[in-house]
Amino acid sequence: MGRHAILHNRTLDSSRKEHAAGGPFRNGRAKPAGFVVLWLVIALFGVAGSGAAKSSVAASNVDLVHYWTGDLSGGIENMIEEFNRQAAGYSVVPVGLEHEMFKVGILSRIASGKKPMLFSYWAGAKVQALVDAGSVDPLDAIWNTGGLRQCFTPAVASACIYNGRPFAIPVTQHYVAFFYNKRLFASHGLTTPATWTELVQLCERIASLGVTPIALGNRERWPAQFWFDYILLRTAGPQYRQELMQGLRAYTDPEVRRVFDLWGQLIEKGAFTARPEADDWAGAAGAVRDGTAAMTLMGTWIIGHYSGDPSWSEGEDYDFFVFPTIDPGVPLAALGPIDVLLKSRGGTSEAGDTALLFFAGVQAQTAMSRGSGALAPNTGVPGDAYSDMRRRILAATYRAPHWAFNYDLATPQSAADIGLGCFSAFLKHPETIDALLQNTQHRMASIFLPQTR
Image 1 (cartoon, rainbow, N blue to C red):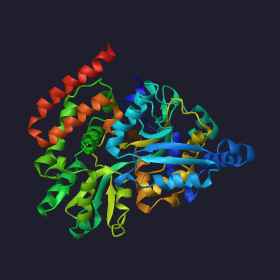
Image 2 (tube, helix red, strand yellow; image 1 turned 180 degrees about the vertical axis):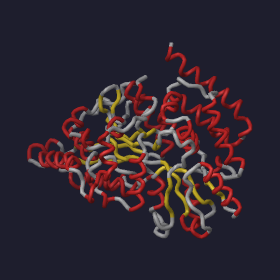
Image 3 (tube, helix red, strand yellow; image 1 turned 90 degrees about the vertical axis):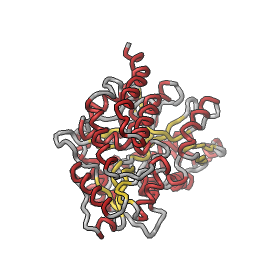
């Protein structure tokens, strides 16, 4: 398995630091490189609109299977509508699957031969597995034609490179942070914490008000991973975490045990939802909106979820803060998934390639960002495309020299399943953590040891 399969957690180079000085949109103007893709796509559309070409692609539909449905549906329809409105003779036909069903459904389609031309996926270990299995085609021509390496930060661009070749088009970059009820905080004189000690004290204060400090809906198991990820990143650091994801470190290490000691402090103080397994992430988000909980640790897709309620405004009714510092000397890391589009093996098509090139561009990514709440991977998206809160979120990502994929995207799927089970069991029975970690390490060894022999 390729190194990229384990963890995307690279130090950002000088070009990203250049963006950090003024972001990718100094004075609200996009960098010229951000327009390269869009102009190339317009040129392609012009060719498609000519008589000869148009007749040859009259029935050129592109099926795109994706997981942006239900509570995660914001943005995708807008992005596709932009393409279909402008593409002469081409049409993207979206097929949305429920988020959890998609995880199994897309693999079943690929295995059965009923694969779509294009489909969404999560960058990192999941894409690496498809690349290694020969299930997706490389996109060298699209990346070279569009000059895409100049359109994304090095961190985002490298999230699309597997075994030395580009296989993906990034369409969203989500950041995991605390989202909190700003009115609740203001009414009780609460301030956002900058350190772990301050977070613990904040939770104690909120609990004394009869409000759940932290909403956690872990029914599908993945929301709890952000707690393990961030505590480990803020204590042992990005390099140790990368080695753990690769199976080079053990879950019985003191660094891992400390994560659960700290996490357990909050559980012991009643900081979390009483039964996290009984609800999902959207239910936890609703608890924050309703004021029955004060905050939740979640990705920026929560912004798209909240946008459906006109009475609940970002920056006014709710806001965000970064995960607090625990050990000051540890390098700062940002956490979150990057959603990408892939092309099925043998899915060569001018229509499909044209769609992918368009989706990499400023216009499409602006539409997706506005609806989904995500940051747009294309650095040419202008600053005025973002709200004030989203600009502050973007600035927070630039301050972190490392970007890490969340746990289930940073380690092989078989290992991720074991880890998510461990986190869920810990939430129910924190007193069994030593046995849980021993069992987890035993099972992880059966996955990683054969690879190192």
